[in-house]
Picture (cartoon, rainbow, N blue to C red):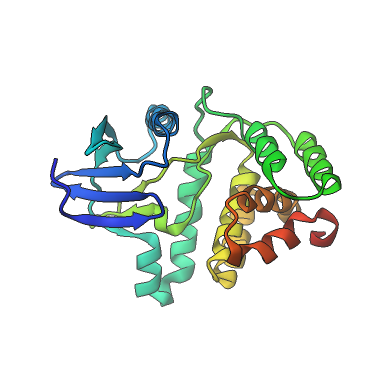
Length: 249
């Protein structure tokens, strides 16, 4: 494998292209368990038939763990939105259609979303009363088993030159309530200073899925609390405000 063509870099990870392959290399802070779990979840979702890069192998490169998948030629939906602002509404419709397709799939061995949220809330530095309220709200939510991407944002959708859509980055996938996944998407768009896009997205999601906006909003404090465990300073004020159920309502 050749590692001389970096196509994407984020905290703790670099993705290289080698011909028809994409090689995601993790730094030393990622444990074997985390990498193997990501690969396992990716493989499980592959079996649902969702359009996504296929895994070829899990290996080590220069002492670092790596996951090797198909390289998908194209542009992300985020890039297309930036290049064609006049087509934003059209792209939002396509974005939601892709998410609906993902949510229509089932993969019973994935982690339960509610269980993951309970663990995340327990790991926050929120006060005990707020944590109790969040735990209680999670328990009150209907238990679903839809495939939830966990980071469904336009930068994780690749559109090929012929118009096919591929969903990438399945590190946070779970099974659960689609409204929670929608709340997560809304949150991430807002954190990326795309509030107007977030509102358009939420309106389209609720219309296309016949979901009451209030059901998505009920998940907002939970996903905000979950995101807060990353301890990103510039996100803290918004997340703390959203995670406070009384204030958010």
